[in-house]
Image 1: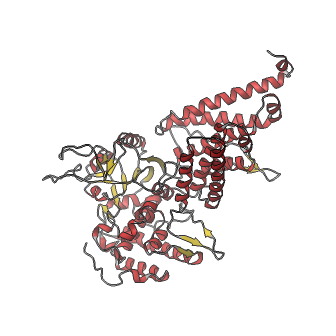
Image 2: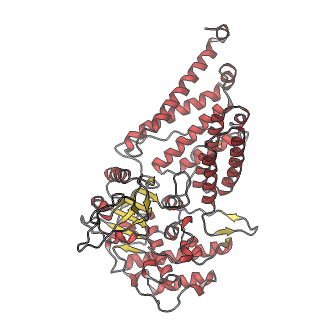
Image 3: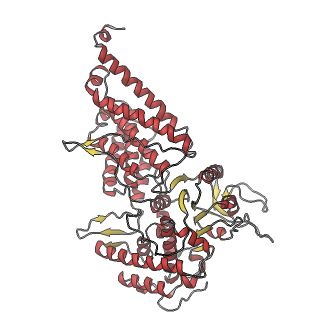
Length: 573
């Protein structure tokens, strides 16, 4: 032991030792999270709680002993920033695993404090590129959380700061990852510009519209209405579209549908101190008793970006296994279509193609470069038949693909509630040009008014008119709900799912989308209309004269009625 260490008082030396122990333990637990599967709730829940516990102790410890740690251990501000960043990451990943949107706010609080307190400011003065990379990664993670919280104005500021940081980094250090970081900037910029329509207030400033389910945003069920008591518990959200806008393994379609399956987040425990600064106190997630878990506010979601068939099947199986009684599994597929080859006398659930799953081999138009027998089926594809085993429990499927109609050839083998909502397979040329910015079908499920404006070629709308149109749509949606529940011809599967707020909203938006596209003059062939399994009774729903009147009223309100047929529909179904 050196003389300098001998001069350190015993109490201060113990403080440094305790801090180093907590720091090492926190890193060990954090790194261990990477090895945990995203499924199997009981396994990762207890591990997460342990990790949170250690980080809470570490954060409080460095706050209480900051002076000693700076003087005796040489604690730097960027190291404090790293701890705060790790806590932010923990909250973000806890949100991903539980879908509890409140934890997004907690992640935001820690990421925001890092920037406000300039924890990473000094790294630009050090000649250590690895520290600058830590700062750049922090910015990228902060931007993801801000996107999910719809803090778009802040995202623009962060992009500007990140751009300056990348420029400084690449000038100071001759690194090989310059193109990589520039791609990050391009991706997030494209993500920001993906919405086809902007809402403007009186000052011509863009108004950010949230499309999560608001408190009281769904009209209650009518008294005496007989619907199922099923609850949406799990959702697999799969994105595998070529050339679609994405950021951080989240395509724009995945981003939109995940928000359609969430309620508005509320703050948890972050408070403001007497001096007006953010008082950061990590709020440990409660560990529910395994025999009686608390009811979730939102369905639990798995986000799978370009999964292989093996990965997709693993997550499907895990979700199916853990699905509670009287619960629904939702599968959302936004993927490139895979079409069948050859013509067979008998057509079964593996003869219609499906949607693409990821493969390491080159894929052209859904076909691998490797030659194969025409009688053989595409391996890297989720066929309708692949979902048959999971129809033993209530299953709600949404397919947004150029081959979505492959999934209308379903067979309900086990008598459980089963519904498939299927996108158009062909769009008018002008709509195809927008496909990189996300699918029109998913846009209708996410924000029907935004989609309606987009299909009418409008790129901006005044806030007052937006609010008037939204209010009118609430009335339309109430009427659509009554059409669904009062129809005598409707398949009971729709009613069994109707009791869940999220599924009810998706069904109503689907009907509105179908009615709108059927009346729009640009959509002239049946392939341009959504379909469903089982089929909806058209006269009671998507072709109802009452609903068509509503569509024309909305079009008149927005001065675009010329784009819609106002008489008998001149298309063949």
